[in-house]
Image 1 (cartoon, rainbow, N blue to C red):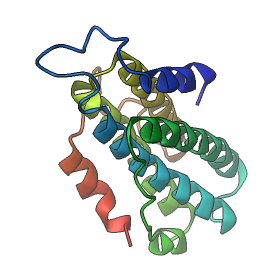
Image 2: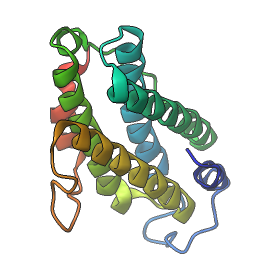
Image 3: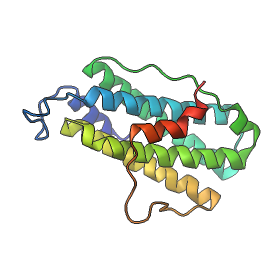
Length: 186
């Protein structure tokens, strides 16, 4: 994650800097849940790219892209862990199972990566309404844009349109996100 996003997440842990904090919503009331939801997804993505690279499932330009995305996902995890701990407690990494995807080869791995990245971008957008702190919202949106760029890059490799949702991105709620990723949890 860029230094600005990390700084924004660190500032969010201090609380009290927002105009979104109102008497009705309370300061940072839902931020820990939002951050931990994002953290679990980032753990999930980080593990996917780590395993794909370790197992040499992708090669050429796909491998170079996976290496770059993996570095981004590591930075997202580190930043979200710090923020979650400052707000309370960080979620634990999920156990994953990607063996069937990797066994099917590079094309299947790329298609699953595109789905994960599009899902991740939609998940961040879907959680925007649940944040209480402007700093957490800004940091989440900074990760959202990176996830969307990841999706566009992977989509390009597999010949999928850059803008699968058209002019407006589709926010995804937790139920839809989990429906998409649950098959890959051990």
